[in-house]
Image (cartoon, rainbow, N blue to C red; front, side, top):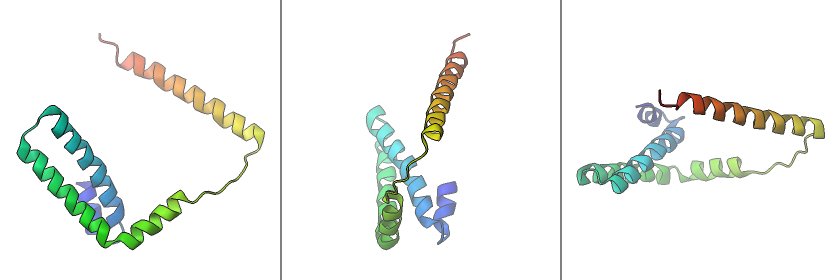
Length: 107
């Protein structure tokens, strides 16, 4: 619903399209691999084609957004900050894995 609401507003249309696209691709793949009703698959494909049409009509903005998102700025972090970020990332990853283990244990 959020993606549909975002597509109604001009300023958030692209964000809504990307959000709905990510959901529809998931739905389409599940329909294909799990053999869900063919009507549901056809509806999801039609909706995705309509999203592509909206993106095509706004292709200048899509291209501009893509250029902004893929612009590379090379900034070197000081060594101490970089090492701190790497260590914190590894610790957070380990904490989340332990948490996942305890959450998914069958009781």
